[in-house]
Length: 219
Image 1 (cartoon, rainbow, N blue to C red):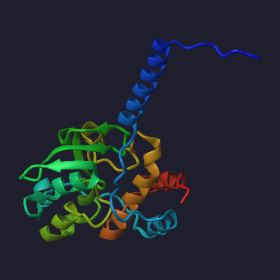
Image 2: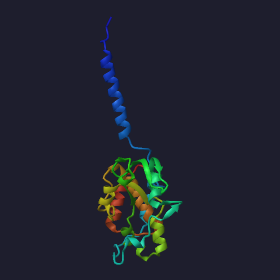
Image 3: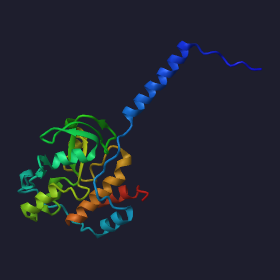
Image 4: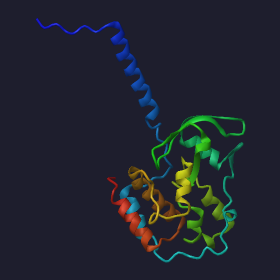
């Protein structure tokens, strides 16, 4: 008969504590329930949209100002566009009377970071305002530019880590892509669909980069 080794109460307590600590760390490190922008197209739809987009040189930045894209307008009650996206993209959120989140948990899709303070997040315009300007938006009315800058109906706005968004600036996918490789398929779909919905054109290097990113998608 084989005797099993005896485990002291102290040893059992240490093992139990280690398991509980591991579980706690896993909960903290795990992504929150993933909230993504609405309207993500399938790979096939994004490919069709990419094929249909006009390719031409970028237009001049002459006359550009962010003020020509009025953004963070009031959406409902005291909630503006930024606060609406922060609420939408949170796993759980509590807001104050001014609608600004006082607590919550956000998963930054671009880099995989998890945040519990809204101040650590920026709301990224997938297609940056300056990029839109040089892709055709310079010819729009201010009202249309406002609609674009506050677009909650398509995949144009997302809450992400602030310094990651700042590193992107107004670059297109030929010079900037999300640092997390697993985010690049969806990012390409969002970019393509946004330009398609709003009738914006592409430059050649941008289209090539988007095609490479789209090729990584499985569906």
